[in-house]
Length: 314
Image 1 (cartoon, rainbow, N blue to C red):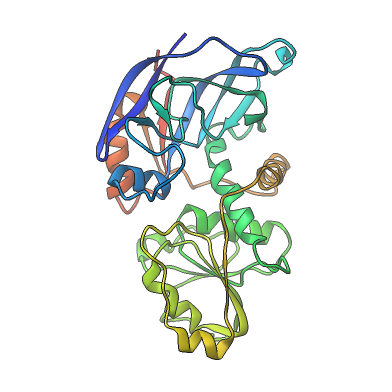
Image 2: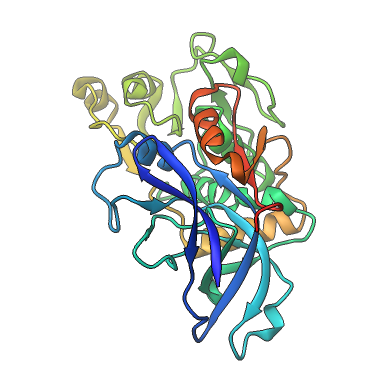
């Protein structure tokens, strides 16, 4: 078997390459990919060459961990999976080409437990499962499982986090956003410029902006004993002014990558129509325009989420 894959040869250089795939192994599935997403967090770091040391890091590589497709073949014992619409968070099936994270390809091979069946109504929106699971993990990161009252950043991750808080029956959070163009699109919660928000007694704030420069301003808005959850990914060293944090006895928590239970939770919420993924996919290009897609995803402020369409890939 062969696949057509996005290959990042080096930072800033993307091309489509035809790669060989291994024979199907025990407990594995073949997924014919319909859509894959481009991450403006992790993949931007790969693109810029700023990704910190990471297991499996190196070029050339196949990026992507937001993939939706149809199971076309299955190893013995998993034949019932054929025809399933699945979300796959990446693959390592490209021989000498690193799979980091390996989801941006027309066809891939993965273990059956990595292909998560999703509701049929989701279709291309299913690429958002990884971000939704990341948001769910951040929502539950506080030791007492108290959801954030303030979210910093109204990109896709911030929107998903706010929607999850509302969808799970909690009080709607406030969301901060500096970019007026991104202030729209709220569903059941307010979006404010930080200068407009005068509150200084938040018990829990979650940053998903990834901007280390904003940490001091967030700490200044916490109540005594309040918690700051770092839910973004930070390429630069994280630092903060100690005296204000000391005076507030601030707790700082890091929400790491999602876990299987987080993914299962959002699969259930979306399947039951409790969590909407509408209006989050803003740009789409065919896979053959991958280089243009990556440039747009990382340079156009209006691009919340770029999706690659693999329907015409052969």
